[in-house]
Amino acid sequence: MSLHRTGILCVVSGPSGSGKTTVCRGASERTPLYYTVSCTTRNQRPGEVHGQDYFFLSDDEFQERIEAGDFLEHALVHGRRYGTLKSEVLPRLTNGEDVIMDLDPQGAAQLRACTDMAIRHSLVDVFILPGSIEELRARLTGRRSESDAELQLRLLNALDEMQHWPTYAYTIVSRSKHEDLTHFLAILEAERHRSSRLRFPAT
Image (cartoon, rainbow, N blue to C red; front, top):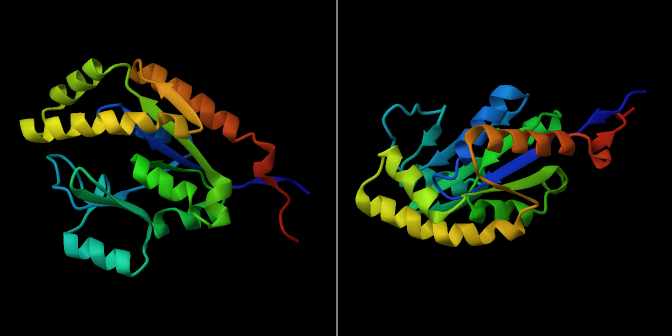
């Protein structure tokens, strides 16, 4: 009788511009890993595709999904709502698939406090910490996707978000896209070999 492994729920956090989205996408392209699509009420940026980058919802639509109990987690970030649908995660973990989520510290804290044993058992959290505020500012400025007011708001929030790294199991100090992805894949590979994740199939 062979062992099988339960799915991993890997949560990646870090302030805007830290490179967390690049790490998530890069990892999902390198190894079997489902990158969840989040819901948001923020405006759709040029080149973004509904259902691929985000599920873009109105405030009313988002509130309806909250009241229906559809979200695994949700939070208000930079004045906009973000959330992950249960349907994006739970069925995949049950089937032994690995799932990666790009979450802010509020969302990550909600998952740590989750009473669902499937979530608690599968959860692995990683924080991408910018090398410096100056580097973070340069990355956000180079993105050119926000107004000066929005950029300033993100920088102010980044200072707060960066205080949360000690609450995560792993922290990667961002250096380059290649190094960050290499470190992240090493963490994922180690977690895939945890003895506690192995199970004998039900008979």
